[in-house]
Amino acid sequence: MGKIGGTVFTLGDNAYPDGTRQQFRNCYDPTWGKFKKRTRPTAGNHDYKTSGAKPYFNYFRWRAGRPTGYYSYDRGSWHIVVLNSNCKEIGGCGRRSAQWRWLRTDLAHNPTKCTLAYFHDPLYASGSEHDSPQVKPFWDKLYDQHAEVILSGSAHRYERFARITPSGERSSARGIRQFIVGTGGTAQGTIEGPDEPRMQAKKVGAPGVLKLKLGSGFYRWKFVPVEGRKNYTDSGRARCH
Image (cartoon, rainbow, N blue to C red):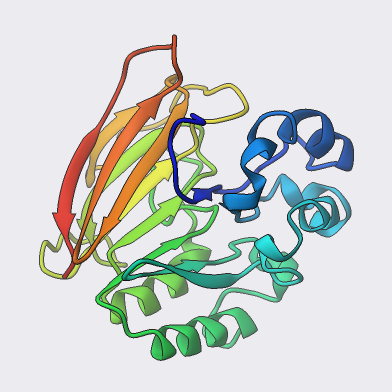
C-alpha cells in the first residue's frame, strides 16, 4: 500500500478494538503510522470507547480536526468534508446541531463543482445491522449542494452503490455515490440479511484499500487488494454533476 501516493483517508475504528493509547502505539503506528503525515482521518465508535476518543485525538492531533472531529480541506479542484458520525458524543448530527450548522457554512463558503465527504457510519448498507439513519441530515445537506461521493466504514466489507438520493432513490442526474470501505484491520465477517438493492458491487473477506483519482470534473475509483491476498478489484469512472 505504500506504493500508492497522495492523501490517506481513514473511515474510523482506527485502532481496534478500543482505541487505546497502547493500541495506537503498538498496532496503528508500526503500520499505517508510516503515512501519518499525509493522513486525514475520521473517528469511529471504537475510537470513542476509550476516554471519549482522547487517544485518537492525541495521536492524530490537528489532522483529526480536534476537538470536534469534523473539518474540511481541498485536494486539487475538489472540496473534501470530514464529518463525525458519533452523534451522541458530539452533541448530535441533526439540523440544530453545531456540526450540521458548521457543514452548512462550510459548503456555502466552498462552492466547488466536485465535493466528496467521508464519515464512519453509512446511511445505507447490506444486511440488517449497519444502516445509520442518524447521518441522513448530512446526506440532505450534501445532496442540496450537489456532492458527488460519500465514503463510510463501520461495516467490515466493501460495497459500492449506484448514485442515490438521501431517500434512497436512484438518480443519475443528482445522486450521490456511496462507498463502504471497511476492509482493513479487524477480520471481515459475513452479512446477515439481504443485499442492498441499490448496491452495484460487494465483496466480503478481501482486505485492501480504495484508491481514488480526483480530477478536474471527474473521479476514478479502484479497489486495491492487499498483496498476496484474494485477487478482487472493482474500478470505474464518473463525471461530476
